[in-house]
Image (cartoon, rainbow, N blue to C red; front, side):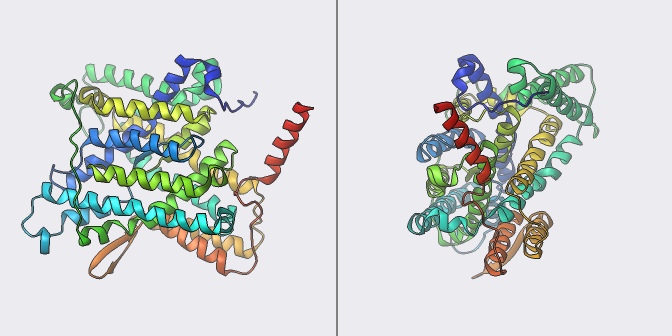
Length: 459
């Protein structure tokens, strides 16, 4: 069986196929993106974030990110889970300004903290601009970025299993469908396996639900209550954020975690596409795009944004690396934010189907990390490399709830991925020797081969 050649320009497939590919990326990000406002609403007793506003700023934030990154990076920005602990902390504030406040009055202050957290990205971007990305990337060689990418995928694995366990039959149908279309699919069907997995398993869910079959816990497979009550067209419920030092001190430090995740995701996307996005358009530009997109979202009542590993998995599976397809998904998200009923229909997708799809997507992310290590020939006969990788993997996977400490009476939580990145970078800088071969973290030999091919074609 021949390996599928990556497609850099989706226009060669035709407009209809491009539209469908954008839909696939939208399905990949949808479940996790709307889960954040759903969880935050639990913290704020139903007076938290709006799903429609979240979708709007996921789309607008992605488009803004592409503008800042010269339209070169195929990344989607969805809701960040890193800030959930911060939202929960703000919801529980009950002293000073927050004494006697309703939950609906507290949420704008949490969003104000999100605005400041997004601006923290600009500080790191400025440092990179001053000292240069090459200097910064000496602290992020493949022995650091590879294990971090592996952790990104594996840390999401429990979520995939948890969702799939609600109905293993539907999860397996989604998983098998994706595998079949990816391996044996022909033409267009081979590059939309995720979408086919969602469609086929959802149709089966409709049939099972009509026949009275339930989930393992006795709940209905499909619930259309919210669909019936939702309006066809509606304006997202925006609100303007407010600022308070207590909420800022809760939210802003979390940017350390999300910035580390951003660097890991950029390395993963670079490895997936075989491009050096850390140098062109540059890590400074991608950080500015991500940070300003987060601040814009928080300013008008949305959650923090972050680059999505789910969509990186789709890039790897579909082999279509054109950023235009991601921008189509962003446009779909914006349109959906004004159609509450359709958003609820997609939101009614059983968790088991999301779990089945995630089995592939999350595994693909970790596989990209393994490939990054292998292609860059990281020498694990060296003790320093073993130590660095070991600490990163244990931190990234062991601190499932993060590490919480108190500064000035304010609890701050660093996620496992943030801790993995911090300890990995520190160990790489402190331990004697080095493992920095290619300033992008991408196999230099691979790029040299590409240059030779281009030279031969020109000749």
